[in-house]
Image 1 (cartoon, rainbow, N blue to C red):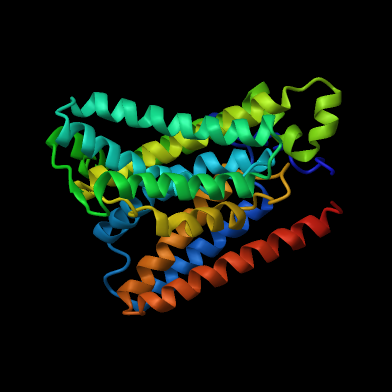
Image 2: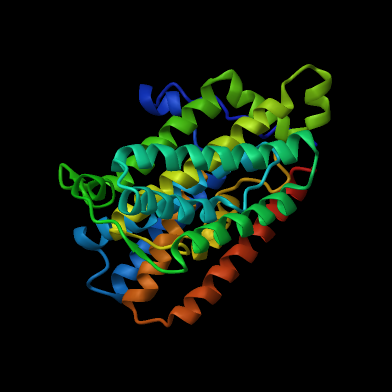
Length: 333
């Protein structure tokens, strides 16, 4: 599988130093950005309440936990992996924090650390089964999704547990310079991952492993270690997303994040990451998350039924997969 178009291109000399460091956007990212601007214009014409500071802040807060999961899922899919358990991990993490703190009196921050460690452990188990036992990641993570979702329901009896701790809730509800903290955290994660993928040896390994794992093994690249690290990162991202979601809601709901798995996968593929591996961009994923979040918000403001919103998400996912196929054939892969 060719990787000629997988690695990021060098930035032009006319760009600022920070943007140059992050890399030059691909044509696909530019097209997504243009579509996002068009979407903003359409919804601003349809509703006077859309293009307001308050609504833009609301969109940022509502997509933050989705973006956190999609951010780490992007390099994993680039490297040829897949994690369908990430949303279930997010639900379990909120439950674990609520149980440890509310039922056993554990310090809230220690409970959060334990829960994030649990997310990393689930990611490591996913990585172990897919890299060492060479099992299909779709089957492994689908099975793990069922196990983790079931565990969250068992711990709570299927009920929502309150989690009203002021310092903890600030993570999901607090502001910095009047900007909600969740989208700030999401943006920091995307910047960090962009730098890792574009400017480090590990990032180059990610693209190489996804482009041709067998060739990567032959030239001595640590294929299994790279994929294992990415599964653990995906587990941690699901845990952090669950922590943010629980802090936003002030409660731990076992299935709160589960309905958003489709959005996470759709954002990654719509953002230009190939299901076949070897190609993708976290900035494309971020734009796709913004597009899907804005679409959901705009439809809600225009009183479109939630049933039709589900239909729209399914259509977007199918279009994203179709675009991935078109891109793959165009590149001759």
